[in-house]
Image (cartoon, rainbow, N blue to C red; front, side):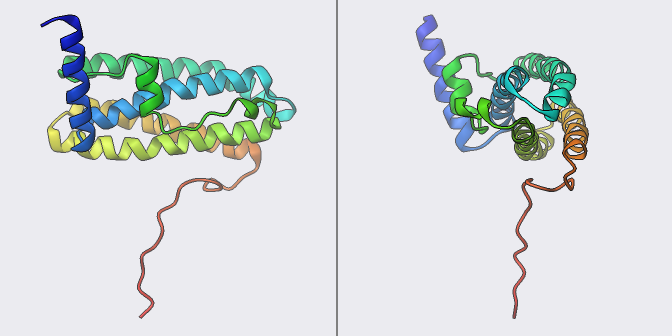
Length: 182
């Protein structure tokens, strides 16, 4: 097969995996979110003002480095499992579920920090799905890696919320109760 045919076959398989879904497909979303979050952290580091800029500047290098380490580790792990990984900007943009807005760099620093915390929280939703599917598919190394990433992000959410003086769950996703009021 030519390189173009191989790439088209990869795209076809990725589309099929996203509709199934598989642990590899959901992990593709995790990779895209990690990639975009690193860009957003850098933007906040450069533009945040006020007290929150101190926290962001203290944490930014660690956040970017840790996210990059997990990004590389997960990519390598997926490839060793025979899974395709997103590699183009177009794929990262398509698979990322985080929202990006260039105007946000002019928001108050505390708002930029809160946005980064909410992005961590959004990423947790994909972790839970990838962990469940990974267990079903017997991909325990992937499960353990994502559990480690989940633990790290939860600790960073707590640190950021504490800095902002927020309750841990403020602004975060919470399941709605489906209780019947009969």
